[in-house]
Amino acid sequence: MAVTALVVDDHAGFRRFARRLLEATGFVVVDEAEDGATALAAVRALRPDVVLLDVLLPDTTGLELAETLASEPKRPAIVLTSSRSAADLGPALEQSSARGFIAKRDLTPTALSALLGTAS
Image (cartoon, rainbow, N blue to C red):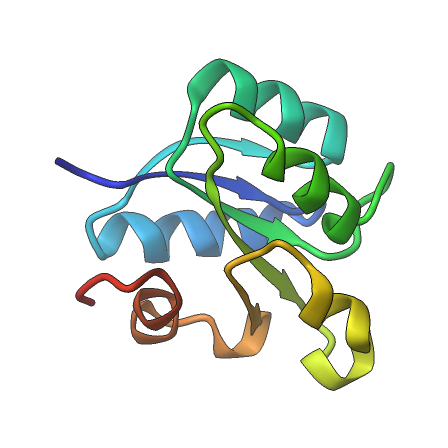
């Protein structure tokens, strides 16, 4: 059974890139969202297995949204992403309930699979 994913980022270009990358490696991208409110509604309606979540969104932070999603009945695996490095984001990243973090420039099937514990 294919792993379903939701891509959340305020930049349409990155959403397209991430969708192509995920779909090329066997994920089924069920939707995309450009802000936290849309992402939360999509998670509740579509119940994706994985959420690729930008750290900085127009209406919230990915860190805050990750905490909200952690309390969902069917909690998705959350992978945070940013154009900034993990070091730039500080200890909040380490304390997050997310499965992990991948800088946008480092997003590859191998890196994602390593965080999710799946084969690439």
